[in-house]
Picture 1 (tube, rainbow, N blue to C red):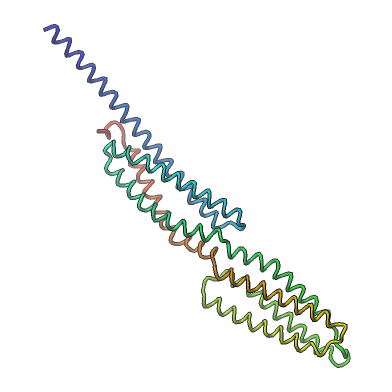
Picture 2 (picture 1 turned 90 degrees about the horizontal axis):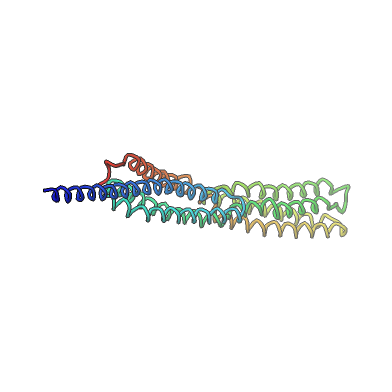
Length: 290
């Protein structure tokens, strides 16, 4: 009988010890699951923030750097999700597993949209168009103005006001084109851009017509200035063609629109899944283990 009690005591102690190991192991896995779910939200927030900065960046370097940061954070999200899934399954947490799978589906949608947005953002075509408008185009337009305003009439007594009127017409036409560049760069509507391009073409025609009308009215001494004005106008219109082509790509406008509309909805859905998952894991403890 004494031996029976001894064996019973040994078995009981062993069972308690084994049970203690199971409990500690389960609690460790719960703790790791909570850590991973928290890091998931952190990494996802980092990814979304970096992607937004890529869209808003005003230089190629800043946009590319932010896009790379977003991609790295997205990899962190995927790594955490892959590590968390088997832990939840091992603990038998069906609801938490479902929430993680729900997040996975939403995150896949997010990634598809994010790739499109980042590809557009790093092209920076609207930003490049702005730089051309404020830089080379402005310089060419100013050169045109300076040269055409320097021409003199062959017969000051008869042609002064006629020449001044033609000069003013030519300068105003170029300034009208410049004034349309900014709204063209900012606009996303093809029909509206086409309307502005038609107006630009009319202004260019007016400027060239004014130069043609000036030619017979100026003396030989002013002809180099008139030729320089024509060259400056050609240069300005060449830059304008580049501006319109970049503006038509509209990558910054399109990426911003996608970020503010479709991506905002998908991002919110992903965050909801992660927060719900964290809340569910926070309620788990010893009684939640198998």
